[in-house]
Length: 342
Image (tube, rainbow, N blue to C red):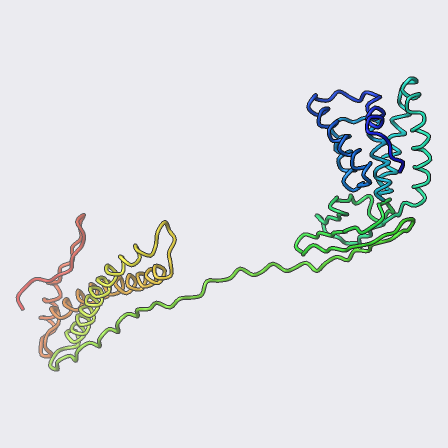
């Protein structure tokens, strides 16, 4: 690229006024343009082109666009350069007559450079197989491509390019391709295997650390009693054992409560607190069963003992004893008992 003076380059870039922009953008655009031209004069096109591109973005001008196209061509980005030359020529076609006079020489150069570079611009096609799920994305050098352009040969700058395929539920697939001037290349993508969702881990079952004490067998019933009294003694013994179990496990539940309060805060428990909760449930169940067995067994046992008699009692005596059984219920609760002389 033929070097040119900074003053002359900037004059050509701003000779045709662009659209209205903010004053600070104009100042920044001018500074960036000067920096870019300095890098061009030094032969550092890789650093020059981004500065001039940003100047054009802040303050779009046909002259700046031409310099940018020339810079990209020297940097080897010939597809980008052709696109900028085409944009410049479209801007030139829309200029007024006096403006065209100022840009006539550049317009001829832009046309010639565009035609020469177009024959060397490589093209890349990216093919996606059929059956891609919804949400599949294909990008080239970080820019997402629409489904309409997939499978088409598109102009691209020579060099290395990164193609990425993203399928929902699968890891992204990357492919790198190197393409030379004047060449065509096709990248065929393959759909990755979609990973099955991981199963939700179940919490292990924790056995209670404290097991309820076994209930002692009822004592042997003395001989010489009738069947009813024998049954009463057995039931009363079971009832007494149930009440003992209720008292023991009830006390253990009260003692275990402090461990629950220490290990569980705001409905969240640590390991010790969780174990204490399980023990508390066990204690509560045993205590409840023990209380029920105790009350029913003791009450029924005592009643049967009182109503029973020796084997020699007559049926009439048993009937009188049966008539003495009292059952009453009221607003304050219910009770079971007996009255009479025994």
